[in-house]
Amino acid sequence: MTKLPEEKGWNLDNSYARLPESFFSLINPNPVEDPKLVVLNSKLAATLGLNAEELQSKEGINVLAGNDVPEDSIPIAQAYAGHQFGNFTMLGDGRALLIGEQMTPDGERVDIQLKGSGPTPFSRGGDGRAALGPMLREYIISEAMYALGIPTSRSLSVVTTGEPVYRETELPGAILTRTAASHLRFGTFQYSAGVGKVDDLSTLADYAIERHYPHVKNDENRYFSFLKEVMRSQASLVAKWQHIGFIHGVMNTDNMTISGETIDYGPCAFMDTYDPKTVFSSIDVQGRYAYGNQPYITGWNLARFSEALLPLLHKDEEEAVKLAQAVMADFSKRYKRIWLDGMRKKLGLLNEEKEDESLVEKLLSVMQKNKADYTNTFRALSFDQPVDELSCSAEFSEWYGQWQSRLNRQEGSNESSRKVMQQTNPAVIPRNHKVEEALEAAGEGDFSVLERLLDALSKPYTKKPEKEYTTPPEPSNRSYRTFCGT
Image 1 (cartoon, rainbow, N blue to C red):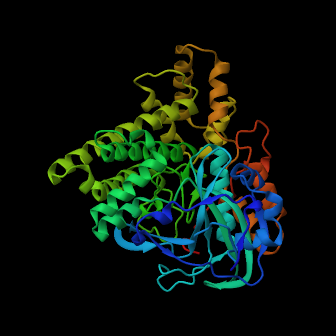
Image 2 (spheres, one colour; image 1 turned 90 degrees about the vertical axis):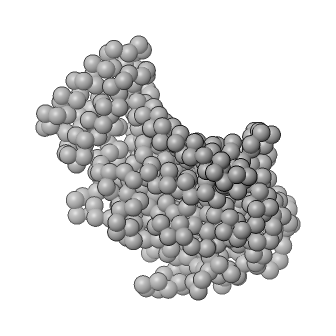
Image 3 (cartoon, rainbow, N blue to C red; image 1 turned 135 degrees about the vertical axis):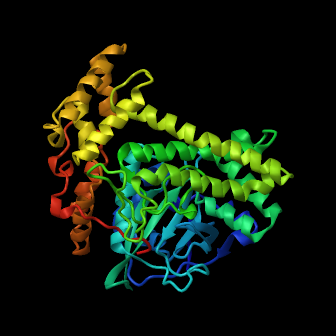
């Protein structure tokens, strides 16, 4: 392994590696045989201060494949824990490597992580590798989320390794370069609390505060303020998921970030037909992480996070519990307020009335009963166009009249309402059948389908979307399952 000079645009710091050694393992990447660049996010590279042309060179691709690391890089695998489907486990980066934190031209600190880079001390017998399909899938979904305005980790590149990985069948190996505000997880704090060193826990919390919420570091009880900030970021995030019909699929506490970004795109997908019970994960047989459960699970995860912080909230455990409970009690109210504000925008409601929640819930009920497409229904309403699945519904006609009356009572023109709706309700989402179509073509060496899909997803609110990206799947194509850990 060689270290490349800084002229390639790399400007790395390693603040996480300066934390106590229990939080990570120093490790070198595992070189791959024949790396080839599949997709590069040139716009993101420019934002990071990286030279996209250099990243496409042999030396640049070797960094993205983990064969080399930039100068000043200290490669590490992070330790963390997590409640996975409700069961607590000590974990860590089993197939990911943090090569450092890029200091951008705007002064931001951004994690650069290789996913699928080979085994680490936390691999638990796994090969530490990843297949091309899932890495491209994360690239597609995370970039779609970014274009939709949802806080998210992002994807810089995907390279193939020239080596196979073995799952149910032999698959081409690949490595994703992921960027994030940080990879600090709820599970990072659970890990620290589980190890049992309060000093290390406070060091980690101070680090997280300085990195993500520096405005609270001088508060009388900065850890209580920190907990409140994390709660607020999560309430906002999950509300935004609900607004666009996104289903994360594996909301374990190790997949929830302190920063409030969406991370770990495993068995995730976007809902077509509206149904709160929708689940895409092949292993979520009980529906724990169904679309309608996501707000509840976020609250549950926050409760586990607050438990890890108890030693910092107050010296008296009973008082610490009271402080944590006060924050948790505010979560559901805050989530509901953010969710309802967003749903008002989706319906063009520019002010607040007491009956708004009932109006929203009635529409959702009618949509569920008539198996209406979630995205297309709201998009059609934005342009006052008919909704195919609801055209013969008397309940919808009644609701439509109530909605029009509600619109007419508010100040502001219909044009203002339509504009808000059109800027809030996307026309294009990464529909599951289109994602699979792109991945299947990529697996056969044709990346043109992927490129066209990425281009369409970069303009989700366009007024003239291509019909192929707005058409729901045929009934035979709607039974969709995704897989985690591939």
